[in-house]
Length: 74
Image 1 (tube, rainbow, N blue to C red):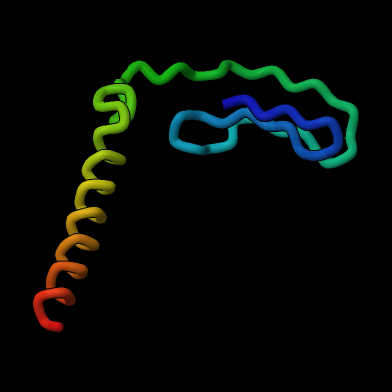
Image 2: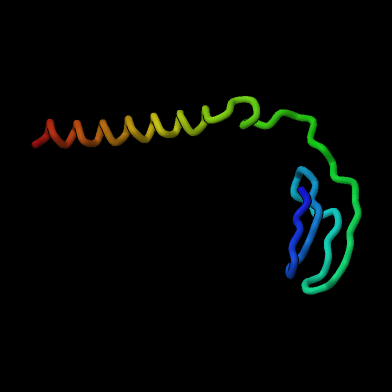
């Protein structure tokens, strides 16, 4: 990932989040580095919004169960 900032710190990071190169704050500078490309498929690239759908369904089921229990107990 390459992060560019006008007044802050600009930096380049690898796929594990390690800083490869950076600049100082409020300093005019140029950095050059090889930006590594991740060749592995990420979970999101593989499955898309499947995780979000599963979490939403589980949350909805929990709310439904809580409301159903409350209505049966009253």
